[in-house]
Length: 316
Image 1: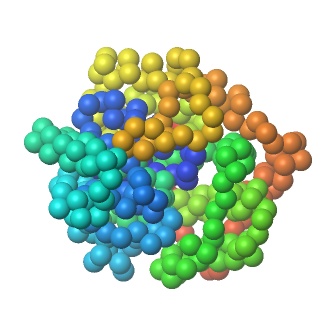
Image 2: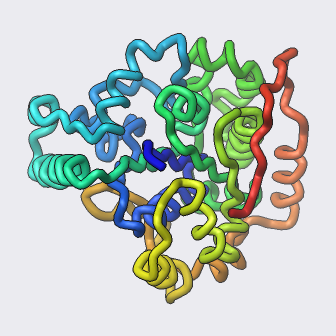
């Protein structure tokens, strides 16, 4: 099986961890968050020769003329050396250029495939599957654990970045339900609303595989073996050993969210099963009940018709 792979899902849903476990196959070139509007890891034209204007940039057939050539180069591992040199000049940028430029060239020569790890592609997952032929893994985390993680990090979301994208609002009108939270200081309600709307969109997106992060973390070896089969990757003793060490050994202790490596990934080794026990820490029982209420309330669809077939949420 050939073709690129996209691992996506909302930030703090395990995309970096999952992407690194797939990259343990040795058959992929790992590309981290080309659609992230923050530099780094985004705004690197050597990796993606297209300007990202919004978090959760929405890509569909109606704007493919702009995005498709750029992503075709990325998944074909064609690095834009001159474009990168013109845009980014710091010592870190030059080191990143050498890292990615070399990885793209060696990957192309050795027949490796591109793996895009990008939570900011989550609302465009169907386009990546249909137009780029990606095997798409869309991770969903338990909503309480997801909101708890954002609360611990002090993160919030600015819904105007979604509402200012007319094609996104047209194709997914439930985004309009977020208008009342624009400017709100209620971070818990905003994170819960983001989870709810994203869940509704992914649930009717064809051509993707929805995967429960919590089920994956609870029993990683058989679950990753199944994902390897889905992606057409070879499950080898070396890959199994790497995944075992990264998922079942002692966790690396860090505070909060930390970028690591030239790829600027959030990946860190962890005891994935043990981490589930503390995934809701910091929330009160009242807050947990509120999150359940906010995320279980049906999202208004404004007459939108679900696509068929619906993807299946699985733990593998």
